[in-house]
Length: 569
Image (cartoon, rainbow, N blue to C red; front, side, top):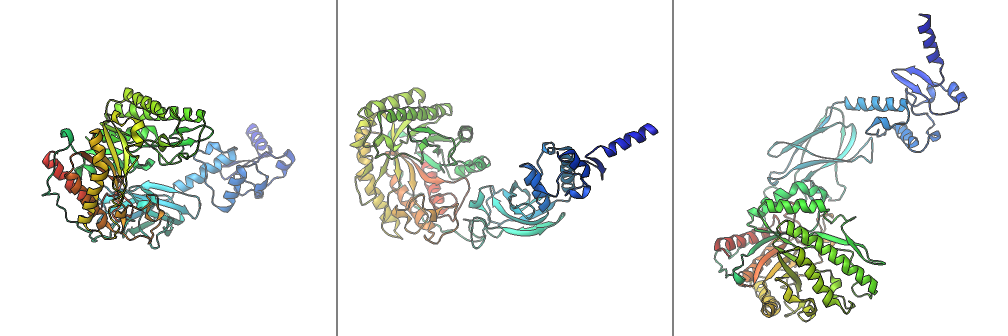
């Protein structure tokens, strides 16, 4: 008995160790005299982790101390990271308190016209306890249009609902529309918060009907294609990659099938990491670029879904100035970088059975200041790719508009030094205007498309006897969009910016433009494929940019593709 009492006395008088409310108070590393004089009242907590004067603590602990003092502390995921036993005890006790509270349940009803493949996400943007708090999680579907999710929160919460984890692009719509628009609620443990999303951004209201466009696809004559080639009923997937897109690949493939697509084009981008003192091309550090594992995932998913693939690698968007003069060393480094870049994609194309690949050249090939050996270098470049890829290779062109008959970029004179005869097909990027009106007729646009075909494309085909593929047919969904003068990067048409009134939405004009284009394609045998620019990973029917998914344009294109399929062309 005397021995036990002596041990207790020793424990109580050892400097810095006091038993209080289940916590062993271990004082910070202060001089011994200070520890002996310290009292429980000098600490913010009853474990002795944080002193009232946080300024005496080292960096890291000082900030945690101040956060604890203000009531906004975010404890580390692993309490063992705390520097003292007292702080570890306090961390575990406070986290346990929070874990034992009842969760807050969010219940939301979404619009009845939400697509069948909709998945709803709860985005919590901040809380009263932590202004820097951010939380995103997939909700649970409880019925056709109702979703729920529960988590432990307390106090004032700012939040909103997202469709398909596409961020602000497909968030619920607020007025005014701003990037940080949100709901707020004062939540207590156990609360059930009921909400209704009336409308998604870039989506029609339930019951709103989109324009229906007349088409002659069902009765039009479809001529045979060049050399009996099967027509590529193509859709071009939007040319960027976000990490959230993994879950949207299968629904997008299904949507393409429903619209009678047989070919899928992807345009993985690399970019210039450096341009000086010598160029370096790669994929690191850019949000628009597929990481290698994601690119392979997407290629494999496309093939598994039964599609053929048109691969169009590109270098975008920090390209060097093609007008500038560079040293011989610079050009040698550039040739090597281009070779490595193209062989990387050639190997992937071979691995995944890609049928067609376009050498969507960096414009530096056509710089006015290229070295005198550019022709030899380009032949070597093509030869190296052929050694890695057995499919068909294409060279890319862009047309002028209907007022510039015969114009091609590059011109047929310019391409002579790039051995066009070495290619299997030519790809065409069609961004050209086919009207100068805001409400052009289908007949006018069809006539002007034919003018471009006859004066620009037909001579190219006849000279080299190579089929042509429209790897992009690009027109914005706005009044005047078929003029072809809208910058693809114009912020006033972007889906990831707030709504802009600069341009008027015109879904009918875009759809009629595709009707006009397909009428001419149907009667042109040397055109063996069309890929509208572009097809997003989620439908955005009211967007003003170039995407056709979910719009009347998609219905027009699908109608023509169905006819090509039925005719076996």
